[in-house]
Image (cartoon, rainbow, N blue to C red; front, side, top):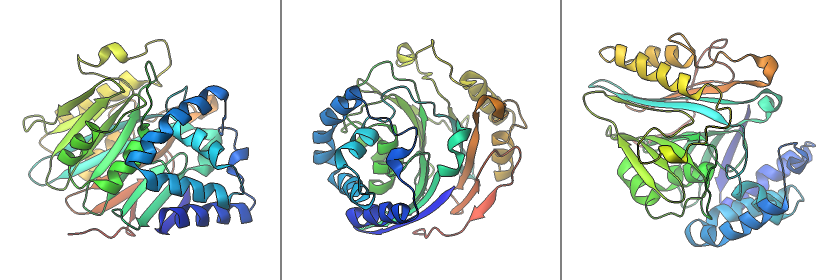
Length: 336
């Protein structure tokens, strides 16, 4: 994993990162996943006015990155703004659990082995936004993270059956980490922002409010965690009756149903003994299939993260948690 620190203005942060990569011979546009097509270019142009209205700062960061890379701003916009809206092999599992002693968020990110060394952990402290620690398989957009107020968010990708101009999954996570303090604020923003892609967002805040939000360009459905169960789970499919019709059953979801059921069963069976160790054991596959991929197929769990929200601690595995140990990341500065 690359480790990046981003400071000052959005433009300056993007330019610094892009220039640093360029000086070290790293050209993002030459990455095999940097796919620019006419269809994606047209879609990104439709999304651009929405970002200009709701999140112009991130466009400044994209512009800075393109300048630092000596590349075309339009190409970077096309790649980033259309992400998750076309075929994309990103799969993952999220859960949040709560009892009187614990507020815990866990996530596995499953993706392509060939790009494993390019994934990023990012510390952001930009002008006008909340600090956050996040992880991504790309750049600028985020797939999970926790901000200085203890708000944790993680996406799970749902294969695009319908799309519309708006924010994609990774940009939603990035925006919400930078702008929100609570789960209620997240839900409020999601009911205002135009949404492009299909995804779930698992959210937990520092006062213990948590939810899975299933959303696409037509609907936002909130699945609240109950005091009785004390947890929520999401994988790569919609589970609410209101959203099931938007699942695409013709594609390989990398054991999505199995990962979902493994997490649910483990949390139900252990709801009187919630702990960081339980979260680690679930994510590392000790209760059933979670990360036991055959790397020869090109797929694997490429990182695993646990946010201990009550105690403001972060644990991460850079790789598959069944083979590597969680290590604490102490660099984040939280507001108590």
